Every structure is written in structure tokens, then in C-alpha cells.
Image (cartoon, rainbow, N blue to C red; front, top):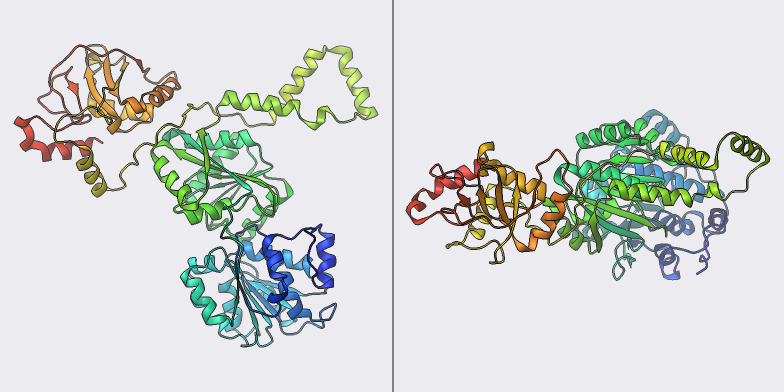
Length: 594
């Protein structure tokens, strides 16, 4: 579909930038019925909405003129929720309106306020800014809104989420009533609808989101990892994809600092983005990513809002997002403007249920797998080397001369081996991690003591029962017994950690003289065997075993009783009848043990 007719000054800028086909949101705002009207547009990040509202505002700002007149009072205002998004909008509008002679001023928190004041005093046509800094200029009389013809609220839902409602009210209440108001938001929630009713006049509703699959250009993957190997899984995911630019999301500033330092130590060129950085530091970090000086950006959610990196092909959730909306917002940093991208969730085994709920709430399908292993990454490196364009490029005369010199003193095998070593030397080493293959989703761990008690009541039957499905489990053994002072209080957590299971998956535990044998439920046995087979050499070796001889009384796993003797089997279930009056004490002791 050819790009629709737009203002001639903007058409030449679009052609110079290679815009041949409009995105859905750009096509929608150029329809004849939108001219001169207020617009309420729902559009995802990366859909080309900055260019969309830029071309939508042009007829109102320029009319029939090819260029703007002398810059005096600003005619248009774009409000963005974050510094990074405001900087990005300023750059986009600068090239879009360059042929029209527009003077555009940015008013962004963290920048030099005196320089902004001088720029506003000197006159401009368009102002782009963040709510807090705009309110500051407005209250000090530096920003004159009396001549405003167009006001744009970019990512309005994010501005409300960040608590900028009062600032928006203050800014919009000073605008001329005859202005156009263009409101762009990923979702049209009740708060956005109320904002539209208050500040827009007969707005035309444009929906480019509903009826389409979320982030159709993004491939979602979920990678299972052992709880103590999540960081190593992030490293191997980065190595597996080798994206020119990748973004890794963390939940806290401390996690950003730790992971950023860890990646630097491993040889990744990376930068960090968090709220504790100054605007100058954030700008330098983004410039390093855009210039290719750094390949990985480790960031918190707030710091990464509004960032647009052209070659960002990979997003990694090192920490699971808090909700589905955050998942979509993070993932939307890639797969922008028709480019393909990959989003990977690194999921500790105990958080798998949470990850599935997030994906379901976001209405996206993810391919589940284990994290790439070191051997798999090395094999993929070999494939990339064989497909590297350097092997097919036409050699120059200088290359030919040097190649002949190399062949004169070394064999082809020696030269090829040196090439392989040079290729690997520039790559960080992959991590040796355990292969965790997805099986049935485990029960999510309780988040607090009330959930723990409710879960205990739900899963503790009135009569002894076999593990989970009611059928006998599969027996495993480890070379730890009575002579090693084996105790269920530390055996159960060990089994859960090495095998990626929960206490609920463990049946009988029988401690013998020189070994311990225990049951794993049938539905988790195959996955348990795969996890323990990949355990480190210095860990306890666990292998399949036969059922031990019948022993004495049973006891719930992880709940030893002082009267138990070594070698007694341990079974999940209620205490025997003669000890049921002591059950509350057993509950509390188990809670301390866990």
C-alpha cells in the first residue's frame, strides 16, 4: 500500500527516510474524516505513532503554507511520560518537520533548565516535554500556551500510571479551547476515557489494537532454569541469539547493578539504565547502544520506558514482570515498525505458574524449553562461523598476498584452527548449566503464611494417600544414610533443589544405613530424572532405585517427629491417631524447617 498523500513538506521528508508503506496507525490518521478533529487513538508501542501524530498535526499547523513563519509562541505541544520517550519524539519530529523549517524545543527533566528557558524565550513552533518540567516552565511564565493549535498526549496510559494526572490537568487547563487534542494510548481504560471526555471535543475513536494478535512481529519464548541458575541462563540466552542489541529487564536497581557488573566480567559490552542515573549518564548509555559501542542494556521498567533502539532484536525478562501489561510494554521494545524481534522469559522452576498466568493475561503464546546449554551454544557458534560473510567476501590483493604468506609456513589445518580460535576469542564463554526441560507445571509456591496454611489444608488428606495421583511413585536413591546423619529436615530441600520439584511431589522417604531412598510422583518422575542427571559433579548423585524393604511407621515428608528412629520411612499424610493432638506443634516445626 503506497503512503497516503500528506503535506508536501512532510512527504519529501518521509520519502527521504524510505517510508513507502504506512503502518496501520499512520494509515488511520490520514483518512479524510480525521482532518481537523480530535483523535482518541489506541496503538501499541513501536507502531509508528510518533510519525502518525506528526503527519496528523501538519494540516492544522501549516495549512497551505510550505514552511513555518517566524518562530514566536509555540503552536504545538507534545507531552511524553518519560525523558527517553521525549528525547525520541524530539528527534523524530526534527527530521519530519525539517523541510518545513520547524523550530522544536525539548523541555525534559534532568536537562539544563536555563538552556530550555532561553530556547523558549527565543521562540519556537513545537515544544516536546515531560509533564513535570513543562509545569515548571508554565508556572514560571516561560511557556506561553495561548497560541496552541495542537496538543498531543503520547502514551497517556503510562502518564496516568506514573502519577502525572495533576500535571496534565494543570497543563491542559491553560490551553485555548479551540485547539486540537490528539490522545494516544496503548489501552483505553476508564481513566483514559475520562481524560478524553474532559479535554477533547467530539473525538474520533481509532482502534488499531483490538482484533489483532498482540505483538505479531515478536516471537515469545519461555526458558526454564533452576532457581540458582537464572543468571547463568540469561548469559546463555544472550549467547544463543547473539542479537546486535539486546535489552535485559530487572525488577530492582540493585539487580541492575549486580547483573550489569556480572555481564561486564563475562566479557559482554553492556550498559545499565536505572532511576539512580543522571540524564547525562542515561543519554551516554543510549548513545553507546545506538552507535554499537555496547550490545546489552540492563534496565529497570521505569528507566526503559519510551526507549527505541533500531537494532533491538532481543528482550530478556531476567525477572518476571509484575503484570501482563508490564510484560507487553517490556516486550514492545523489540519487534517495532515491522521489524522482527524475540522476547525471552527466564523462568525459575518455582515461578512457572506465575509466568503462565502472565502470558495468558497478555494473550500471547510462548514456546517453552530449557535454557541453551554450553554444548548447544558452541555448536551454534560453529554454524555461525561457517555462514559468516567473511568467508564468502571477495579477497583484496592485500588479502591474497597475506594469505599466500600464511600458507607458505603453515598447513591449511593450522590456519583454519587459528581462525576458529580468533572467532571464539571475541565471544564470552557460555555457562555450564543444568538442562531443565519443561514438563507439567508445578504448583506455585505460597507467597505468604496464610497461603501456606491454606495450601497445607488443601493438600493434607484425612487418610494416608499415595503421592498426587494416588498411584505409587518412582523410587530414587542417594548415597547418604544414617552414618551421614541424614535427616528429612535437610534432605527434602535438597531433593527439591536438585530435582526441581516441590514437597508435594515427594512420597515415602526411607533412610537406611548407607543410603536414602525416596519416592517421586509418577507425573514428575521423568522431569525429576532429567534435572538430577544434569547436576554438577560435586553435588549429591541421585539415580533411579528399587523400592526398599518395608519399614516402620510413616511420617509426612519434611515433618520428623522426635520419636522417629533412623531408617523410618517418611510419608506425606496426617500423623497417626495416637499423636494427632500434637498436630499444631508439628505444623509449626515444619514451618521452621522449611
